[in-house]
Amino acid sequence: MKPQPPLNLPARLSIAALVLLGLIGGSLIVAHSGFETSPRRGGTPTFVPAPEAYVLALIMYLMSSLALIALLRNRNTSRQAIAAALCAYVAIAASLVAALAPT
Image (cartoon, rainbow, N blue to C red; front, side, top):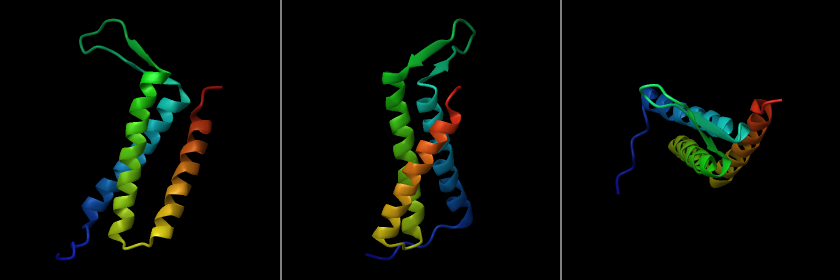
């Protein structure tokens, strides 16, 4: 199997944006125990409560962590460094949830 060529700068920036936006989006959902959506043509907004919203938060966190792993694998980092980065990711997500929580 041929080795994969390294990712170019625009690809790395796009993947880094997925990491950041997935982390922020998932943390916002968890911090506010749900999210609100409104219909396209006006009307009453609908609040999606915690149990259903946590599924979307989980998907966002998984998307974000997979993008982080892809960035780290592109740099040929060791498994221990990837595990440390994922532990740091969890710590950052927890502190972001605490910072974004309504008072």
